[in-house]
Length: 302
Image (cartoon, rainbow, N blue to C red):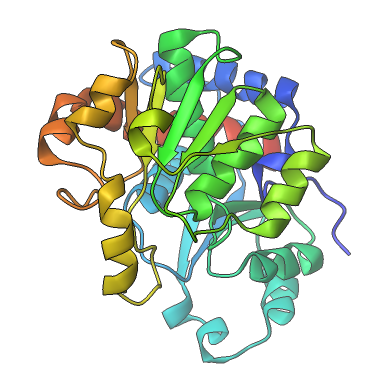
């Protein structure tokens, strides 16, 4: 079985490693146009995507090229994986060709099985359970502005999904305050909550979004219906009151940072007015995917 260091969730990194990734991301951002550091030179990096993507695909692919490597994009529609070949067989074959793989897939068990049989490092480009590369880019965006992230209060509004799971993981490692504003009856994944306790983390659930957002340093959300899920009108109606609107922003600190991993459904999880008011934060966050993922790839693939 594969004993090489992977990045399947934030819990695969230590606090010190995350800060080192932020330092390298800052370096890559400042030196993007004149960077001669090419740590992925001669490395062939596979990108297996079983879900559609804009930011994840482009930022990883550009990042691999800028680090001197060669990306190989593979859609499951074009692979035997999409016709039922076992994950472990695909992994063992690709290990003979590639130096590392980025996977965007459905169940966390799927990427875990691939990593178990792959003899090279694996990076999670999104699963139904976690989105670790995105969440590090999110916190890096805050880090650029605040520097001290130990004392911040992060408020996540909406569906308890792979983004809120990743915030829970990250809080357990980094120690900031985390509040989830979710509807009554919505539950955080038990394994995610148990892992948070195991790592010494804690988070609070508050059903009133304005109380939850009081004195928030960071307010964030995600789409109400995650990729691959059926459109659920009942679920959307329950989540609709948790839209990030002006009252939420007014409850937060005056210098609040707003994040959204995109794509945004204006009028659903975030109002048009709020989105446009904080568009600089949001598109800085999107750009930071590139810089942070370059730092992650340097750490994992080299």
